[in-house]
Image (tube, rainbow, N blue to C red; front, side, top):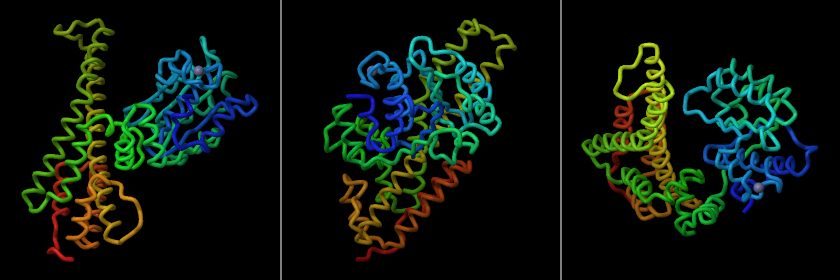
Length: 382
Ligand SMILES: [Zn+2]
């Protein structure tokens, strides 16, 4: 399996990247890989980095390939941020790094995974290095769409636009890479709406599937005001547990690491001059937890929307495949006992909740309002 085999469903978009490997004449020093979330942007960037370092153009087996993919290659720098923006100081450091020759590899590759998170001033700092990079340096920026990156930057990059892969492609990847049973792989790929990361988590983790089922059950379980209030509280709790599980261990590790760097032993008094650094770390960690919770809510809303869209498909008799094939029974039931107008109202309520959450409304309030709207209004009809 070469590194390109795992960039699923993107044969055409990645063509220019592969051509640049095969023919040095078509090499470019600045690339912008775009694509919707879950389309595999960051994986494509790492595959390209591996192929650049590999003597066989990305065999997927040699040390160059495996370390580049894993993010531990000495000459491949992966920059991913969990902050709202990439700091200008980070970009300055990258530019200094870009000016140096690769230590053992053939290229110095710098992958910026969230290039959309750069303020304009930061972009301007980066611009010069992208315009005139040292001969063996390659910049690979990733963003959801070209419009998410400053026009000055994107006009100097070659743009590789990934698309949402077909669920079949994603399913094949899950089966090939993780040995997932093909039927389960397709079910998860459909449920994740082709988001590779989400599909993979669903396929590997029965608890994640159970949590998703629980969220979808809201559509049929909410009958009265009490159910709605409970459902909203449940969602908040699920998000908090999830965020805690995802961040706790890492937070403690980072703290221990910082303490060691500062030469402070745990339990002793921290000098005031060092306290600011610790406070900064705590703030970053808090922001990360908040973002994680937000992602969990967003995922829950996306899942519910996919269910109501399935209901719309049944209600309008469209010949489109359902996203939630495993829930077909519930979907048909809901479609039979509600009207299309109700389904549209529920979809609206979900959209509004998403906007409110993005606009910093307290999650419980936004979710309660949403859950109340999901209650059935019209009496049963056929
Ligand atoms: Zn290789």
